[in-house]
Image (cartoon, rainbow, N blue to C red; front, side, top):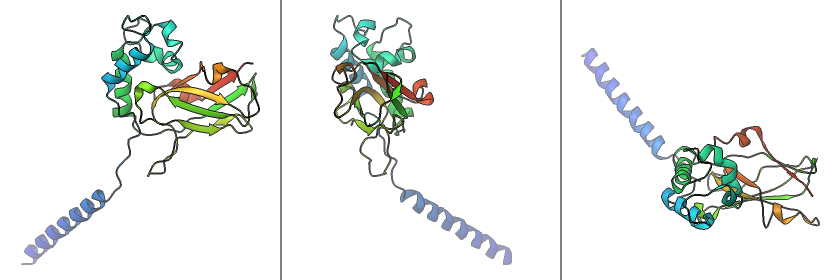
Length: 209
């Protein structure tokens, strides 16, 4: 009888633990996904529609001058070694963001002017149109040391930072005439991905004017 009582007590204890754990798990808030929601294949096609001026089905070096983020990421995206980007290669990057890098990350960017820290400049990371209309810009202002960590609007989880994606870097400063090549016609880009070496060592843009 004593052995039976011990077995019954153990059974109900185990069931109670499972119910408690199940309740805890179900009450946890969902993990937010900040990656682009656009269909990867459609994003690849849209990128070529936007930038493939000679209609040869790929983005060559000249065309990538208009897309600075992809130009920067070319060595990582160019799987066949033709020094150009196809719709499929771009789609593969978007798919990676969605499946392997859905969260935000804090970026450390340093802005200098002729080698000296540029304080009080607004740094805006504007997502490329082809990665989806739901992508938001990340914004920040440089410190006295010229550093900034641009952030989008914080979601319900209160997570600051930048979503994975291709961004055009726009830099302006009140009362200072920063050339168009750094804002309205920017030549600066950023690939916010975990395999981007630039992000690990810190991103630095030296404005020459």
